[in-house]
Structures are given as C-alpha cells and as structure tokens.
Length: 430
Ligand SMILES: Cc1ncc(COP(=O)(O)O)c(C=O)c1O
Image 1 (tube, rainbow, N blue to C red):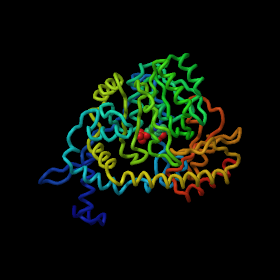
Image 2: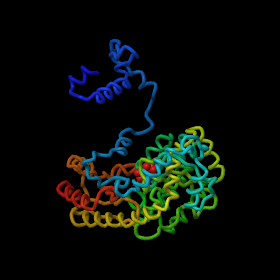
Image 3: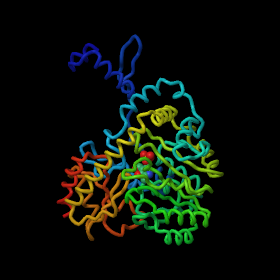
Image 4: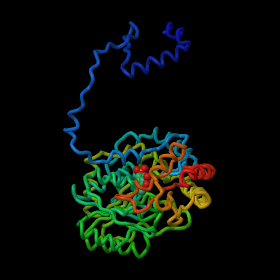
C-alpha cells in the first residue's frame, strides 16, 4: 500500500478504494495476513458463439427499432424529441425525501402480493374510479404493454394499432409474438371505418390505442369515435388496450375521461404509468382489467415476476399521497404550456414549410409535416450530429410513411433550448 501510494502519489484511502474495486472485478485477491495478490489468469481463448445464431432462430424484436427507442443522445444534445420531462420539471426533492424514508421502512424489504401493495392499488384505482381488485402494479407503461399484449392475445394472432403510433407498442407486439396490422389515424384518432375493415380482415381480438394526446400526433379520440370504437370492440368481442401514458399531462383544459370509464363490459384494459409525471427512473405503472381478463393477467403477473420492487411501490405511494403531488401537477401544467407554445412559435417562425397537424391540448409531442420530398432520415441524422435530437417520423409508422414528418417534444428542453435547437434545424430542412 505504501509503495503504491508513493508511486501514484495517491492517498492510502485512494489506493485502498482502488484495490477494493480491483477485488470486486476479480483482478486481485486479498489473503488475510499475507497481502493482496494479482489473480492468475489462464490463457484466454476466443469464445465461439457461432452456435447461438442457430439455437436462437429468427429474432422477434426488431433490434434496430429497439435501439432507436432507447436512443437518448448525450447530455450535450438538445432534446427536441424526447418522451420524458426535464429533471427540473420533476418532483425530484420530494422523491429524494420519500425515497430515503422508504428505504428505512420495513415494508420496503418484504414482498407485496404480485398484484401490488393493497394501499398503492387503492390509490391508483381511485384515479380511475376503478375497483382496487382490478388494478395490477407493473414496472412502467412499456412493461404494461408487453404484458397485456402477451396475455390477452394468442401467440401468432394479430394486434391492430393506429398508425402513426408509439414505436414501443410495435416492439411490445413483436416481443409478444403477435402480427401487427395498422389503421391510419388523423387528428381525431383512429379512422373507424378502416378499423372495422381491419377487424373483419384480420379477426384480431386486440386493438392498441392512445385515446388521449397520442404519441406522436397529440390527437385525442373524438367523442363520436370513442363510441364507435367501443361498439366495434363489442361487435367483434375484442379488447382495447388503452395506453393512458399522458394522464395528468393536460395543458389547456380537461380532456375526456379515460376510455375505460365508458365501457362497463371489460373490453378496455387500461395501462398507465408514473414515468411521465413522477420520474422515468421510478419504473412504476399499472394495468386495470376487469373480469376473466383481470384474473388471467393476475396469474400471468405471478408467473412473470413475483412483484414490482416493494421499495419502488412504497415511493410511488408516498408521492401520490403527498400534498406536494397536486401542487406538482398544477405547476407542470403551466410549465408545459409555456414550453409547448415556445416550440410551436419556433417551428412556425423558423422551419420552412412545416405544418403542425393540430396544437396538442396536452401530452408531450408535436407532429410536424414537412414539404413533399423532405428526407427526414437525413435531417434527423444531421440534427443529431449538430447536437439536436429530433424524431424521424418514419419510426412512428408501422409500415411506409405516407408523407415526411418530424416529431418534436416540449417536455425535455427549456424554452431557450427550444428556440436555439429549432434554429439549428433550419439549414438542414431548407
Ligand atoms: C405512448 C407511450 N406509451 C408508453 C410509454 C412507456 O413509458 P414507461 O415504460 O416509461 O412508463 C411511452 C414512453 O415513451 C409512450 O410514449
């Protein structure tokens, strides 16, 4: 220790910390009473993994699409397309406080039932005026999607999704071994006549929809279409997986209630998440399902994963029942309004020929159509190289895009970053 300290001009504490790390990596071993020795290593041979390709067979999940979903950029990138909130918009201090308290509570260190902690299920159920028995706690919205698709649809059958839509839903369907059929959507949501045709053609029993502030379009399913979609689900004996990721991200006023509120017969299974409003790192969401579907999902939950980490459930419960929570949501609304308006103004002033389909009344995203012939693949790649993240619209379509689009988001960048970032795009689009 003394020699190393002298050689590297480091304190004894630093040398000791370095040796602990090397020990953890298995590169040195300590022999009590004798000292620390470099671990002997046998001759390294090149591993041969070739056999795995045959054993694995065809990949179900499209790795390219998956890598783009988690493509965060670097901390230096301006996030003009990103589906989570900037850290300053999250209740971070409150989470630190609740997290430390939760770590010390006995409840954080014992298992909960696989459906989740009864207290948390009660609080989540109250948000949807649901029965707490119908709520299942899961690790975030994405897990909720793959879990519901896998459990509600037969392997090899078809799930219908509106298009454009959230690329993570396509990955979830692939992971569940389902075929994907797509139906176009406009500013009022999925086109119902085409959904009827697709249900007829594919005999699908599962439809994936985002009725409120869809990612990427910001569309809200119109009241007429809500009723028609529910009728179609009833006619075809189908489930609707309602991805209610944007709950509590209203900006302009109140949106219609979740689709599940209009459906007494258990067609709608709702997936919700705290990733957007509390913290993406919390990884906590819920599935609400009634009747035998709820029973199946509960059994499947136990098979998958005995329960979501009780500590995470404790933190979520602490946050949702804290008096900070309503104040946080109120502040969020004001902040998001300012950032949304800044983004719309910046696109309107600076991006030549961009057309915004509709100004979203909530959620996080803006869907902008570029002039015919614009190459969104090139634009998003060059923007990335210039330090700006912007979403290539192609990734949001299940099949070929009918026109060039970019997805913008207003929750992750400050108003100053928004105007700077959009200006950076101008020479790339012009
Ligand atoms: C539409 C939609 N659904 C679900 C999710 C999943 O979110 P999480 O797994 O972080 O809860 C996202 C995340 O971007 C999303 O945009």
